[in-house]
Image 1 (cartoon, rainbow, N blue to C red):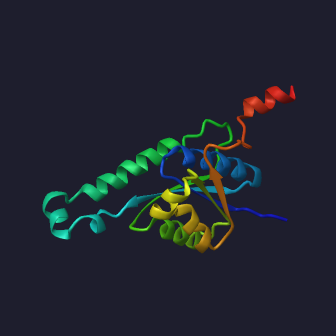
Image 2 (tube, helix red, strand yellow):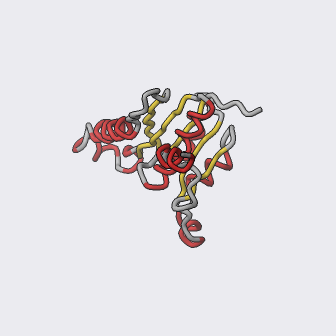
Length: 164
């Protein structure tokens, strides 16, 4: 029997992540699990020279993180009469895949859901893939949701209409 108590959806706020969130929500409802939704902000300390950061932008990282928290909170507004237990998380890191895997380990996540754009071979070779790195290093199963794709998760109203 499959027992999922903690499901993690990693989001970059893009369309592929939105599709992954739909899957994560549906799975969390089905298994009565807590939905963890994680966004990794870029660590600007590693992006900029330390002296430039300190002299001209002392609060930039805080502003980036706070903006991400607000977007995450807005993303998780659920108008369902029975709200889904959710845990929004913002982590600052230089390597998103490692941050996702570390969080999954720490939070004892049973399943990670990640969206992917399904880029071509050349783009993948040049840029790599966060999803692929998560698959290789995750402490649990990983569901990759490719966007666009055939959707298995349908809106409740559509399901009700087709059954009626």
